[in-house]
Image (cartoon, rainbow over all chains, first blue to last red; front, side):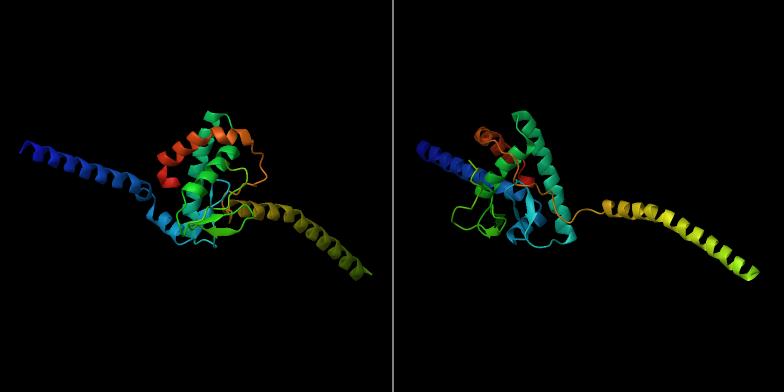
Length: 133
Length: 76
């Protein structure tokens, strides 16, 4: 009786951990504006090597406003971090751009290669600037 | 004779008015260019990739960059 109780507890804990894990992994996507998420998934916007978002196709006014808003917010964060780390805003933005292309794009999303052509992420490693760490 | 003089004077007045109109042209131009500057640019913030990147600083930005992306999922 005691053993089954502890087993049940263990199951409950495992289940709770699973739920928590699922929440954490989906949090990044859950917090994106649905319109932004859709624009990414549809390949309308993509990641630039500079650390900002770019337009793959001529944007609608709504998409344009959305991307410009995000880029302004990104630049604010980059500026903060650049100051805190004693580097230029461009350096921090560039470093972050490397990360965003390599780690933050999923299959089907767009990114710009150093030769300025737009590429679609797939299972192969993305083409990034040679200076990326 | 008198008629010709009048005609010439009219011509002089007209020339003066034309000059006056030309004086306003730069002003009109200024106003127009002012309007163009107000409209938002077609392109997003684009930074030339020829920026000076110090290779050695990129490595130590790893943790800070990771933190920024994790803490601001709505903009990345």
